[in-house]
Length: 260
Image (cartoon, rainbow, N blue to C red; front, side):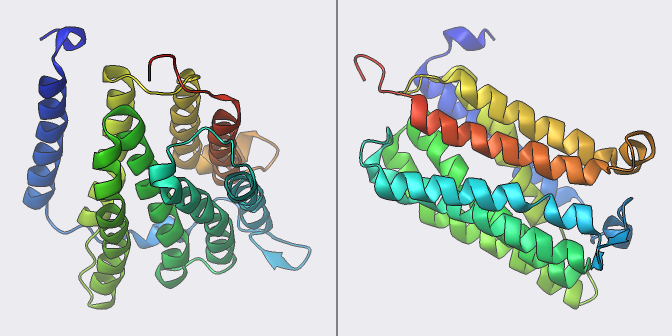
């Protein structure tokens, strides 16, 4: 099948098929508990009296970008957005702001309990961003309809994971699904559909920064050993926050495409 020649309906059918397949695959997987070694990061040094200092303070850029984004949307009435989903943009940056706070708190005292404060705002930001993608590339109506359900689903996925951990049978499948499906669909949507806005290429930089951040996260100890004792996880925070800043710049620079 030549994806470039697909009709709008066929493209939507492809997206729905991927969602259905992902859900079915998740249902057939056994419950996935949180690996307790997840909390054992490469850099556990106490510096200036603060545990895991670099993993903590590397979250500060999230707080800065979150503030910049909320401030831009609140004060600049000329920001090039769909006003119908104003709250999706705002919730994204509020989520990023609290990712900085929640992740800092988690890295001070790494555990499943504190991990909730990291994952909850991150998932809220994910769902808000996916709503923006749906609205700008597929349909504003779809985005408006999906914002609240996606936010509820994201929050529920974190609650469900933590609840099952407390019951001694942790299950990350729903949380993983909520993370994986938007990450899989977002680049496909950007590729298959046209946006009403210019500077669409900046979304690819955003996606690239996310992929790079995940690579640094997976290489936490290797990077720590070979990069002047700066861990991959700390760099992950910085790279991911740069991606969020790219989206902030995207909102500042873009304009409506002619004919939109």
